[in-house]
Length: 261
Image (cartoon, rainbow, N blue to C red; front, side):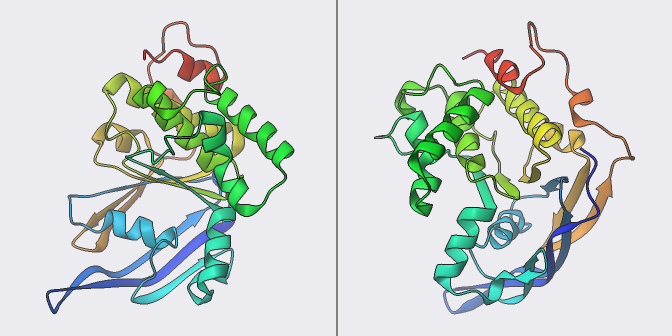
């Protein structure tokens, strides 16, 4: 997906301190980062570099000690807690290493959950959730609970849930960290297809060198700062870096259906 020139997220001078045993630990040290609509950005670095802390702050799950975060020119660090929660639910989708699905609800209900919290129309929400599950290859698992799904299927439900409110940005923290290599590649393929077909903006934190080398833009962090920000040449297409999957249809749902559970 060729990124638009439109700036979606701009972080300036982000500093984050934590107090531990009466000592201040500085985790982020003046981070500047701009993400444009339609970009796929990967953040890499050793453990403790500040990657997940930056993702949480960009996702408004935590606030910076210093600095500003603007979404399309709006400084979200100045919003009240209630307004910030509503903004987050509408604008940002999250996919974590652990899927955090609700075990008592089936796949369809789990995907609908952000919309139910928002008070969306149930009929329209159900139709949108069903369509997303079909898109990620789980149209045959709508009424299955998380305990009845494989790890790859659970993560695809989590991705559909992240997309149900049609957010501007998907933030993913080690989304394939608990999956085997074949299932991980199926999830990577799905991310790339969604970026191409929907124009969805992705920011992924990963330790996976394989995933990083396939991303159009790789941001490297060390000791709470960005030390490198590299972009692939114009026209680079992440899907071209993936090998063919046996019997893989062209659709996103087909790509995941090929995954061996």
